[in-house]
Image (cartoon, rainbow, N blue to C red; front, side, top):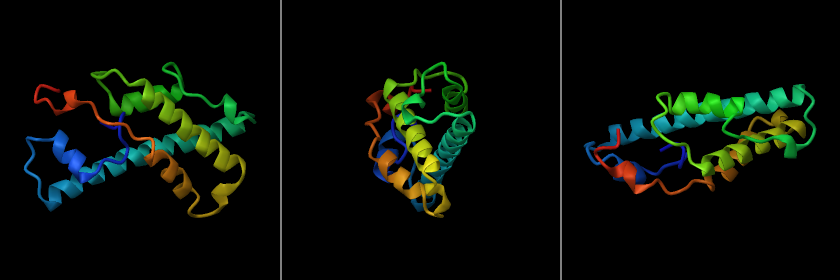
Length: 141
């Protein structure tokens, strides 16, 4: 699901986990898991953006994410260890936008502000896609 939505609502979670008996605690736990998923994602983005700057990258246009990139491999290994799912192209696009947002913020010293990442989060949350219906199936994994 994370390949499609980084910020699922509780209603989306309930739709895609029909076998779970939801209560406040379970809903809260699922939301926390997605928060942890996002944290790993953003840590990787910041790490790769900072490394690119150290490596001498000066133009945001040189920041890309492809299926053969080290960043993609790190994310895919974390979210899709068994390679059960084909990662959608849209995720690569969102990852690239995220990486570029981090690169721009760091290269313009916006990271000196304690809340510098909030602007990035606002951009990325708008890039969520609908989760395909096949994830609702009880035969999905």
